[in-house]
Length: 104
Image (cartoon, rainbow, N blue to C red; front, side, top):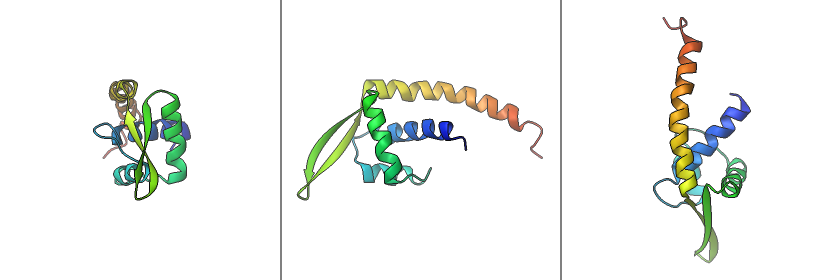
């Protein structure tokens, strides 16, 4: 898969994973794993990038004597998810064009 396309899809997957409730890194990985394989070394730069873009916020909470970072989707992140849903229609149209005539 094209690296830029995959990068964009991973961003969307992370936003979708925290859409309904705040979450932390390990839980995000577990939630995404049935759909796409993602490692910690891939996830944390995505989380930083999404935070810098204003799509999520971070808060630290003590858990078992250690600080755990919880991520929260912002209105900007929700807007990005909505925009992706619209973009996906175009992507599916392109996909249908590309595979036409190849199905049997």
